Length: 208
View 1 (cartoon, rainbow, N blue to C red):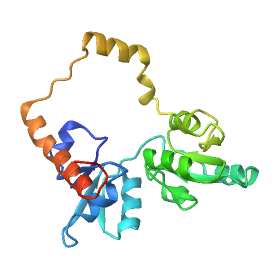
View 2 (view 1 turned 90 degrees about the horizontal axis):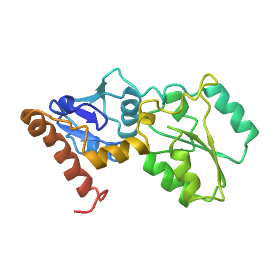
View 3 (view 1 turned 45 degrees about the vertical axis):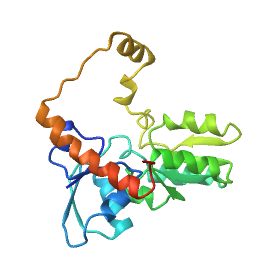
View 4 (view 1 turned 120 degrees about the vertical axis):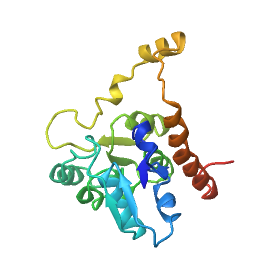
């Protein structure tokens, strides 16, 4: 079983290897071809990995709420208004959105692409918070958030936005709130993360 890193600690105890969107391909390719794979909890990332690696996997029927709301019709219209813009997307997006993309990559991959790519304009299909980092790294370029199905700010994750500078300050000052995990959760959950780190290091994604 392979689980996306954004899963609970207890789910990690059932997992053989964790993965991120950056190392997911390398993790899947590290598994012997004759060994069946269950992939959790993001079915869209799983579908992308099936297409990318050619491996047949059983997908857990879960998804990121942000990456499921992008409107194909509105993106097409937006591209018509910005014909020189490249459309880039995170692999947690649905397949019909990824099929339109000029580039597919993890959050870090998308950021690096916009820095190194020669284009000057991008339509970005992922959580809108990354646009600030993109603009900061490439102030001379234009970044446009991909539109959701309706006119709400649905491409901003409400759960991520719970984190604020004030909360971070208080957390660091008082070292609270404390999260306490059972010893067996720490022991069994860590194994899947350690395995991921080993694969990432062998693939050259991290230094030893």
